[in-house]
Image (tube, rainbow, N blue to C red; front, side, top):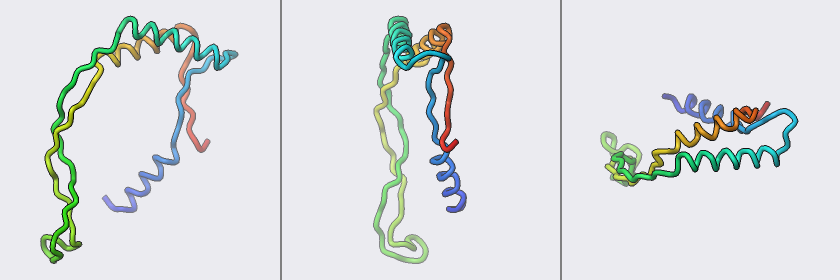
Length: 119
């Protein structure tokens, strides 16, 4: 891809930022916070965190200086892929817990709304 295309994509992503929040007609922020806390408590009661650790193998680019020449090192440096091993912690119950929280909020008459800037 060209650098211009990459810049356009990045610029678009930064200008289309947004915020998702729970809304219900006539309800105050305090009411929302209290009911969300109640639903979150219910979600954690039903699906407490179940963390596991796993490993991910990947590749990272490493900056390497080199003698400048036309074929192998035209810029005096290059990036080489090196293997990396990362420890990742995942909560196996996160998706189910979030579903319980959302269902609870919907049952209480709330809906999620995303607002984008600039509008």
